[in-house]
Structures are given as structure tokens and as C-alpha cells.
Image (cartoon, rainbow, N blue to C red; front, side, top):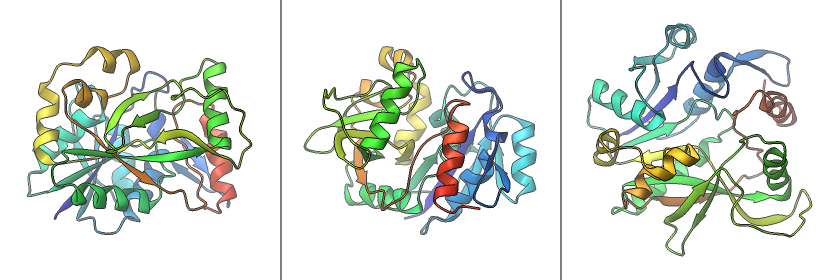
Length: 266
């Protein structure tokens, strides 16, 4: 089965304009842009046939071509990364069985998250869309709660049923738990990892659907599938000692840089 990875990236982010070109410094002090680190993460994934960056901005395109990435130019009217992936697929053509959306703000995504996501979709032939979820330890949960107390929109959480199909995704921390957790404790909260794997028919249909109420309120593109009654398979992945966080706000830069240093990334 042919696997295409698309990294959607736009310059005009509402919360953090120019985010893909923000430099992140690792253990050696060397600076690499967010989009470069996201590309590096994609290139570590095995079993992938093609990796492209999909953008609507020449600055991002020039930077990406500068480090050797393949770039697909997409419209400024794409409302989110899924729509941008759909447009990229249409322009690229080809017989791709699975398309992975590795969002350009997730440079800490381990290769096995994507490998296990693709394997999960392959193992469920009736599933049209899948996404990884990571059980939050106390450190992650406390970070999510701290963001909300400070009025910041940080990571997304997910709840799913016994069939592992998603029930809901939210930028609030769900499910509610009144318990206090130490950093190393396991919690009942699942951190949604912003990666998606689609079958072509689901991806190409998506841009033709109107935005739903929940998608608009939460600002979460995956809710369009749920509001249309399209199940989304949640594939639980394990951190294996890796720290994970997405770059959503300027305040996330030092947090991610600290994680890069802790894990020894250049």
C-alpha cells in the first residue's frame, strides 16, 4: 500500500504568525526552523513512499526547498491542514492508498507514532480515518491544565469508546478528573497527537463538506468527520521515553527547546 506524507504549513497562523519559520535550538545550540524539524521527523518514518510540504506561502516554500524538501503550492483559501492535504493530493495525483497529514507544528513526533498509525488503519479495512492518541502522564496533564488556567489554548485531548472510535476531541482537558497527579503518574487523559491517516475517498470528500458547529467552536478540523458521522479510529501509541508537545503558542518555544535538549536532539 502506497503511503504519502503531507506536511501542511501556512504562514498566516492566527495564534502565531510565521510559526513554520520559527527557529528551535537543540542540544548543540544549532537553530533549525520548525518546518525543517517537522520534515526531519517525517524523513525518519519507515514504509513511506513520498514526503511533501504543502504550503501557500513563498517564504515557507523557499525555506523548504533550501533543505531539499519537495513542495506543493496550495491555495490560501484552504481552511485547515486537512483541506490543504486534499488539495496537495489532487495536484500530485498518483495511486496512494494512505495519506498521512503530519502537521507542521509537531516536530517531536516520533517515527513510530506514524508507523503505528498507518499499521492501525491497515488493520481496520473499514476505517476511513485514523489518528494517534497518547496517554498523558502527570507532567503532560499538568502542562495542559496550566495552559488552560493561563487562558492559553494548548494541546488537544481525546475520548474514545471501547471500539477505539473517537467520541470527541476538545481543547479543554477531557475527561474531567479531580485527582492530582505527580509527573510520572499515568492518567485517564489522552493527549491527541496532531497526525491523521486518511483513505483517499475520505480525504477528497472532506473539503466539500461545510464546517460544522463543533469544528467552528473548538477550532478542530477532525470534528468535521465526526459531525458527518464518519468514525475516526484512535490508535494508542506509546511514548517509549520520548517527550511530546506541539508548537501552538510562542510560549511553547522554550518548552520544546528544553525537550529537544533533554532528549539530545541537535
